[in-house]
Amino acid sequence: MDTKHHTHNIPVLCGFCILLLLNFFVPCVHAQQSASFEQGAFAEGERMFRTNQPEKAIPLLQKALLEKKAAPSVYNYLGTAYMQTGNIRKALDVFLQGIEAAGTDKKSLYYNAGNASFLLADYAKAQEYFSLSLAADSSWAPSYLNRANTLVYLGKFREAIDDYGNYLALAPDSVQGSEIRRMIGVLNDELAFREREAARRAEEAERIKKEEERLQAERDRIAAEKARLEAEKAAAEAERRKKLLEEYGIVFTNLFTITNNPIGRFGMRLYKKDKLKAYMTKLFDAYNEDTVEFLMCRNEINVSYDGYLYDCDFNQMLDLKIYSDRVHISNYKENNFVKRRIAIGNHCYGCTAGAGSS
Image (cartoon, rainbow, N blue to C red; front, side):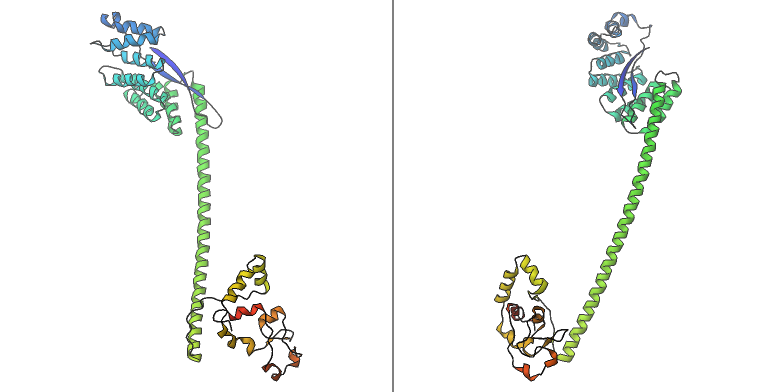
């Protein structure tokens, strides 16, 4: 029996890189070959192959394949010769052709087809062919080894460990035994690491899920509170409308807009943003003379916390006291304020814009 060896790198796992052999099996040619085989193209092709001349062996083996009674082992020889010359695809075709032929060694042909598929990086097919080789002979150790190698490339580490174990059981004296046992250790470490990572990711996913549930509960609480406040607001609004109608005969529809007087912090904010002039222009343009008659400054007096008198609360904010020598509540006499000059400024346009504010 003649066995050819080819070495391939196994992926790096947990910091190790292990080399395992992929064996290309060529079955022995039985001595009881017919004379036509021994003296024909097959015998010469076999001789070229065994003397490491695959380029010369290929045409002879191709010719032998066309003979009426081709030797069953010609498929393994020819396919392996193609492998040695780097024509992996052609080698695979020959191995598969041999599988379909009668009287051939299916175990070795499936095995070699698996090796060819492995080199073509078709690992799923390689696994399939090695499995078919083992279906033909479950005690064929090399198929366990190379299927294990293939399973590593497929990321099926637990299955690979099983196949490495089966190989060692069938070939306990293998020169690769120590490397294979080391590989089994590496794969076990990798599986343990993956299990820890899976547990960590599951724990993190659960934490994120609980946090999202908490946030959603908070969002729901806020939404419920907002709805409650809006309902209370709507109820209060309805009560106010009812009271206005019953007590004053006023039907309130909607408040569409309200102006903010450009004084104090609001005025300062407009000024800093260079929007004060534009805001005042809007108030000027919206001036409505009909509002003047109803301005609060015409029939009310504003009193500050310290007793000083102002025409309105806006004037109080600007410290524009009334035009009078009686500027304090202690000197207040109603007759003195019935007819008076009102202190005004640009801010007064806030009360005369649109429908007015008083």
